[in-house]
Image (tube, rainbow, N blue to C red; front, side, top):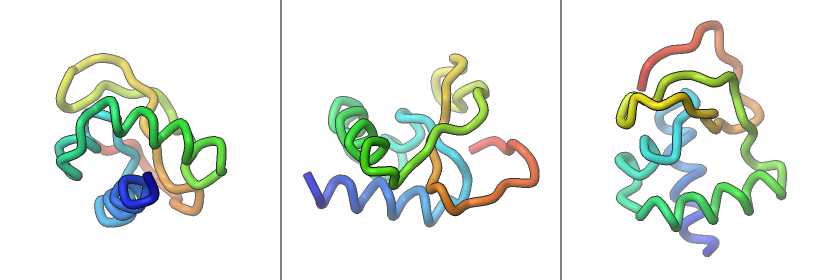
Length: 79
């Protein structure tokens, strides 16, 4: 839903670094299935983009984090 999309965009903006789905789950309180669906919608709309792969701070799995397209990063930091 739009509200969930707004929560995800707000979380990405507030944290200021690329996040995995599980990291977004921790920040927003949304369930992972809701986050996954909203991220797909937001990617199609061009409102979020994928960044360089890294290890998730929660699952320790290799993930492709998501960020807002306007954010610039000098380094890949942990969540």
